[in-house]
Image (cartoon, rainbow, N blue to C red; front, top):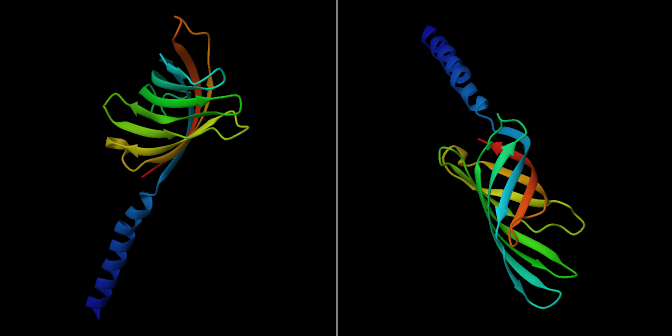
Length: 165
């Protein structure tokens, strides 16, 4: 009988001690914002007077509103293609962020919904410390005056929601 009580007590202790470990590893949800500063030299293919396709290779840096949030100071590379006509303006691409240790996240930039001022994106892959992270991002881009001629400057405000294991 004493053996059964001892085994039951030990089992209860182990369940509480080790079972609680699983609960402490719940997913962490984060929401933060920042600004992406970038430059590009786009290649534009004029289809006719009203339609064009542009290809952009964008280089930049991302600065968070709070420097303690993830991805503060990452280097960015964005590969985009856009189509513009009188009736339609669409842009799709991929954005890769690389931190100081070489770990990366890759975002898929989705088409801007009609009537929206922001582009949605979703986190599709991460390496190193970002493995298995999931997330979404909303991007609002402003275009200051570019210099020299033929270059493009942009400032993107980004709001990010991340779920990390």
